[in-house]
Image (tube, rainbow, N blue to C red; front, side, top):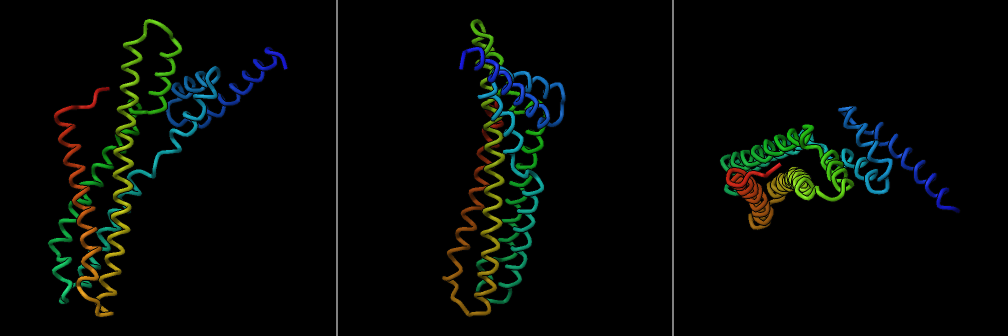
Length: 228
């Protein structure tokens, strides 16, 4: 096969990828057209990024709200199961309220990050496209390229924070539900307090981890804002 034949095949593949990227791109058609045009010469690199950027996003706020609701419901049932028993000191109403407060803080931060990352200025695909465009520009674009890379990295850091919050809330919801069933079982089976203490300690460790992460990121945000 000649070089000309390979070039034709490469161009056909690029055009096909461009059509797929344009159709799959949500929102602004101008941005979708730019992404599709970039795909023609750079389809082996750009097509996977453009086609998976939106698809890779997690469920977002609704899923996190559901996790918070699961925590709240399981805590209330757990408190009811403990009432009037030797387990009451392990999960009092006050303790449950503290856990709910931390979960609400984490869910609120996740919702804020999710809403932020849905804005056009925080579009990872567009930021990656800008980096690729500058790189194709060649010499004389060092500062612009560094700025574009910084912007892209900041977006990825924000996405990582959002995704980490979502995972932490889902895992905590599963753990609190397990605690609820453990408390109910202990009440009716007459298990010892020691048998429940381990899972209670793990719940508190997760809750404290949530609070520490929020406080730490809040402190960084107030002192060293992320540049874009």
